[in-house]
Length: 497
Image: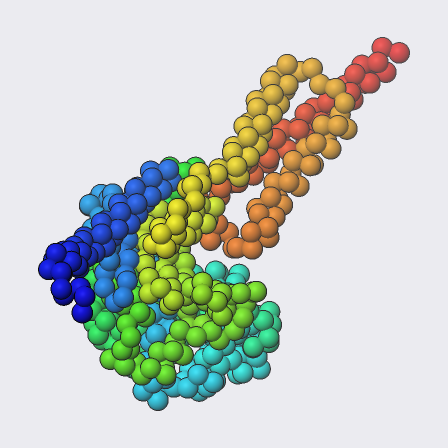
């Protein structure tokens, strides 16, 4: 070969090859460091803008933890957050319950198409005929016929009772389904609550015991728990509720009855182990390949480009951008989990502050992190909007000013237009009766849920109702006082005549 005839060319080729070997890993390391630095900066800016006291994030790639970090403090004792700090997962708990169901299916203990009453004979609804046709698949895919509203009625009760899951399912017997089984998708916590009770019935164990023995420990999730005592022993501490954007230590307690649908507590380190199960090529260690694929498959289409499966939302099913994910919310926590099969990236975001009107913000953080992982520039972090709270405060202030005006009016004694005062009084009283039912109707959530997930709105609404009642009573009093004054004047005129 000609190249061998010239030793200088040989040396040059060798030097180029050696440089390539040496500097390629360096460039890869540098690129990874840039990604991590960008994520750090992006997350810190987000937490500061949204006044989130504590957060923990882990990102997995190719079955390895690529990035993990903790920020801020927990709620009760303001302990520093680390990647081992447990947070409530919210509805991400549903996928872990789904995994437990998948495990029972693999063991031939249950079947996907089995009727629920086969395993829970005492389970029923107000429509007993409909209840008898609900299958395990219906519960997993939120097509049982139980509405979102009915699910919220039994959620977030703060129960300490170890039998709370069974007790809550027994209370569902009074629920009227709003659709036939399999007819309509209605996201409802009640579905996964029933699955929790089913797990307890077929295994003869509490939900928390089964999850610990067959899910958490085999996956290496050492700081994860599905009951109140276990959560606190692992280091769980309550978070914060948002009041006009300002974090306030919560008074909400762990709910033993809520573990199957929202109250499993876990650290980002543990959830990284869970994501590795989704991303590893050899999944047969935990489930057979067939069952693992089923676990990550859709059961029903809910919207265009969106499906639901075993506690997972699956978007862009047949494209390169396919994402398996779920959000989670409790009154004092907010979380996001995602896995991208095409690129192998997965991540968990755990935060310890929440408000119903601020929940969407965390999805922007998730999408921003994904863009950084894909080598793209993330979108600017949106600011929190408190328009609804400000409107409530303005209305409250106007009603308070009206209340003061009415008191001054009564004291001055200068009162005219009796009918106008009476009509305004009636309007005030009608509004006071209807404002909370209208709020419940407009958001589609029971009052109990509004108080927990939007405490500032709930308190403002109560004060508005009180002021409406007071203003209504004062207006009617002015009308009556004006009437008495008119009668006395007429009597005086008659006496003069």
